[in-house]
Image (cartoon, rainbow, N blue to C red; front, side, top):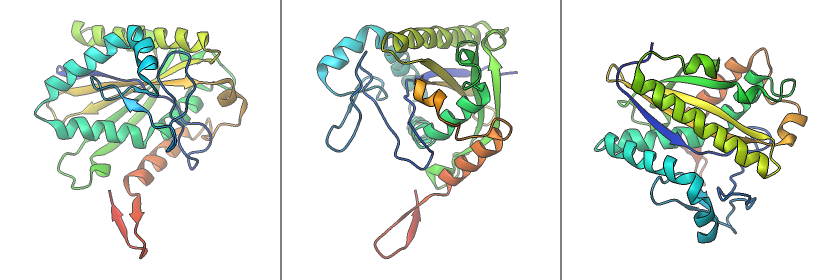
Length: 253
């Protein structure tokens, strides 16, 4: 049962390609654009939601019709979370750091290599506990559970406002899936992250991932039988990652 107080956020994210250890790939969110983010080609974030990224003003303009509703929802939810800006930034940081493990888990949990249409019927649901007392931002979320759920079960929520939020997620997924197919990309999958706010409610975040034919042709990074444990290990590794300075000293971020 979901808590009574739940905020619905929307993070339009793109999947990285290759192994978890490989550099993450971020594409422009403009419709039909395949420009990749790099030091030579930086992408600028939408000033409204601070999530979608574009290579040019023209791409942002072209993408506005499909981005408008989710952008306004993001701005509204960010306002509801104020003045708790730490929670907002912590959530954004956690999703950015764990986008690759979540994508790998989604591919394995849905068994997309064998059932390439599974992303249309199911979503990967991840439950986190939020630990604001932790000094390191990387350790403020703890993985509680990860399960594959069918959309018909996800939408079967008795509370009206929660069901409305999940229905908006479902509608956004269908829109993203249609857009991806028009770009010769296989489709869009969804990971729903539920954050438990220590008895004060729950924040639900939906992260969309583009699925390319290459993702289905290559051997999955996670095993079908042990994807949950592999997901947990990679999230834990990210939480304890340390940046090394020139002298070899580490500092947790």
